[in-house]
Amino acid sequence: MQKAVATYLVDPNKLFREGLKKLLTETRFDIVGESAEASGLAEGRTGTQPALILIDTPTGPENLNRDVALLRAAMPEARLVVLTQTM
Image (cartoon, rainbow, N blue to C red):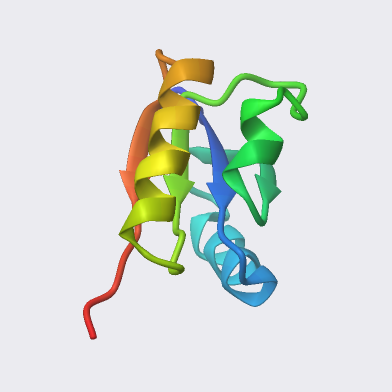
């Protein structure tokens, strides 16, 4: 059995977060928390330190750069996966 990966979801769209949680059910990715903004996670509002952070900030590259820098500073050991779409 594979070791569970503590995973945190950051996405402003609650429905999208719920869909991701459903997709990751019964996988090795254990959802330990979620928030609409990166600042909630960076301020330590989660009990478990995530090993993986899935982040989507569709409001523009400047916000994504800010959020990634914020999370990198707060949780340097966590892996970040940026979810994005092209228009």
